[in-house]
Figure 1: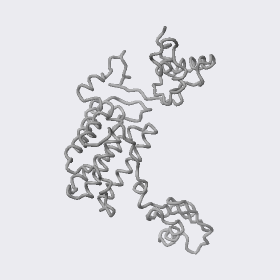
Figure 2: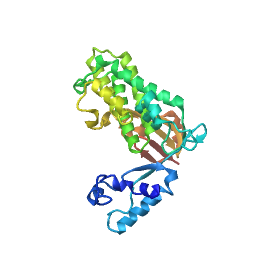
Figure 3: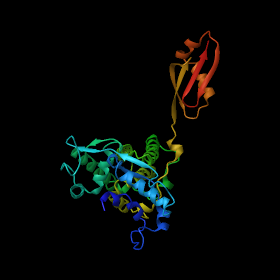
Figure 4: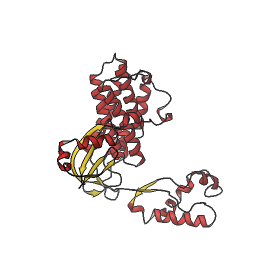
Length: 332
């Protein structure tokens, strides 16, 4: 049969590949399907995807399936161009994964492919970008292996109750990155997730350069950040991170550990900027500690010189307050 026919029902075969009496086992398919997330190029929309839906609906009507749609969610990826032309075998401008793996390792190819841009947009292949991705992974390797003397397995017990400013900022950066990367992975924003991981790596490098390896608090803060870095990077660069995890002496395997969770108290902003308006026009901004009561913020706003001159001698009709964002003083 035509290959399009094969590609239109392979997802039904995958759950029971060893079945010899029927095309697929109803029980296996019922357990695994429909597919939660399908990622594919737009060129398949009128071929493979259309046929897949047709065959699924036919099999549903025949009583073989309990669902009518094969894929619960579809994400259409962008096209990759090289030297101005769409990358394809027919044009002979395809970059061989085998060549990349041999020269740089599989993790480099994975990292570059995910970092090159938003996955739903077209992008231009860059050999320089591949080299840059490889260099970043080497920097992560060095960050772990060159600071082995500062690694603390029991860092949680040594985290400082009264951290220095540098320690507080480093912990805040770690937990903000956990939040950012976790959210980006869920939304398939891999490029921005990687950018956040790179920022964390740079901050850890700067922290390591200034920390005291004899200070338990410094080592605990650094260890917390380093552990988060390796765990967050592991879905993208699994081979490197698994090796680093073992060198760090961590158990069990990295891939048996739960995903890191951010401490919301560290992620929350310490200071927020409140916009102050008079009759809907911005007149000032006020920085206050996060959590400050908005009634107090309104009083502070009325005492500001830039605001007072627009409210002086006028009746205050009402004060509109949007928590931690806005104070609008309505006068007449």
